[in-house]
Length: 281
Ligand code: LER
Ligand code: MN
Image 1: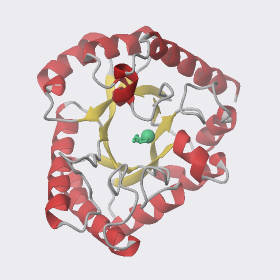
Image 2: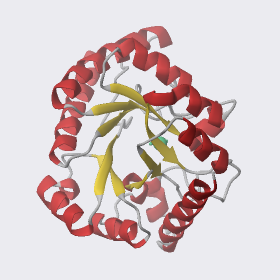
Image 3: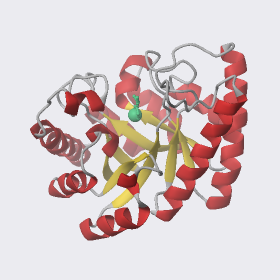
């Protein structure tokens, strides 16, 4: 299995500093925050750094913001918002291609928008249609899209692995698959390993954090059973760490004065725990 960390958890931290942490704790890859227009992610500069540190890019984490200044929402009843989100995803796909990432994460409705624009049924239809358009572009560029189910306290449309499978089936593209996130699964799934088995070969990325969103071992998720299920489905993609200090948003962690040591500690503990379970299962 490939070990990766989503650099979204490091918020405004200098990218090189984050990459150095990944190398120090022997990760293979990084999942980059999907912000292709940000200076921090200038592709030539990023490519050079990746080469220098011997890291791959496992994925691009699409950011489905729901803020006063910017709304990225594939399920919006407002055509303009849907269209600007489609264009945003085209840019993420182009960016993925430039830095040799295999996949882009898609959340079917904005994160922290908790109720439908119209009805859940109408929003579902709008979102599926929008992603069908994105999928055509992804097929052309040969980049995969991974539908991420997120718990009900952050979004309302696709919350479970089964929701994501239904959604991907409706989009109906060779390049639309699903992913899982153990933190959200702990809230939404009846049985985490069983959900992994149901996802089967549709699963192309797994975000990892413990039940309290801290690093592996600090909560009560049974990671041994998770790894066993991943082995059973012959999972060949990345385990992408997404542990957060106990705050709701990574930007609050740095601003709130969380010590940087915690990032090192979480990176070290998580890979050690997972590799141990990989070895013994
Ligand atoms: C992002 O991968 C995620 O899991 C969400 O909780 C982001 O808000
Ligand atoms: Mn996630």
